[in-house]
Each structure stands twice: as structure tokens, then as C-alpha cells.
Length: 119
Image 1 (cartoon, rainbow, N blue to C red):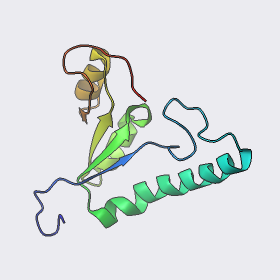
Image 2 (cartoon, rainbow, N blue to C red):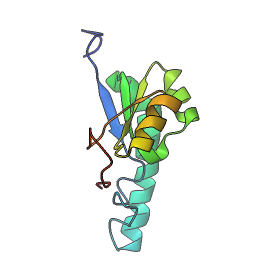
Image 3 (tube, rainbow, N blue to C red):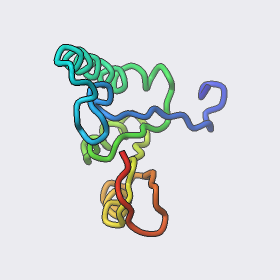
Image 4 (cartoon, rainbow, N blue to C red):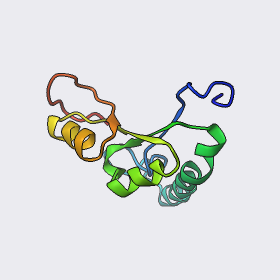
């Protein structure tokens, strides 16, 4: 897609442990063997996002759940010419941090004021 038109924005969205855990961190399934299997798949999926899929898909942005973003993480993607976009940023303090300190864009559920997190 981007080879045909470099101005097109493409992105991958990722939340580590998304196969084995719900957004609030609780296990997705009560079965221990299913949970272990999905954790192994989570590791594989994380590796694929960071080493294979971004190149294969030719992404220009990487949408990452806010809890897993650090200055080093932003630098990792900057070295690959990929913009990091944080989700979901809902408090004014978070918005200021991600925009001014980390220098990245974010996705929010609230344009006006703070709102409760949504998993």
C-alpha cells in the first residue's frame, strides 16, 4: 500500500498480553493450560509486531496501549521511522505527559476534560 503511495498512513495496533488477559489485567480464561498457551502466543505476537509485521505491513505508525510506552520505546520506533501513538489517554495530566514529555500523539475518549478509563 505505502509502496504505491507513501503519503498513505498505515498502522498496527498492539496491547501486550491481549490474548491471555483482559484490558484490566485479569486472565481471559480460568483454565491454567489455556492461559499458559495464550501467554506463549502473546510472546510470539509481541515479537512479530516488533520485528516482522511492521516491516511486512509497511506501517508509518504504531498504536500502543499507554501503559507500555516509555522514552526508550518511542526511540526504538523513531529509529525505524515509525511514529508511536498512545491509546487511550483520558486525563489532562496524561495528555500533557504524552504530548509534551514523550512528544507523541495520542487517542482519547475525551476532548474536554478527564474521563474514566474504558477497557
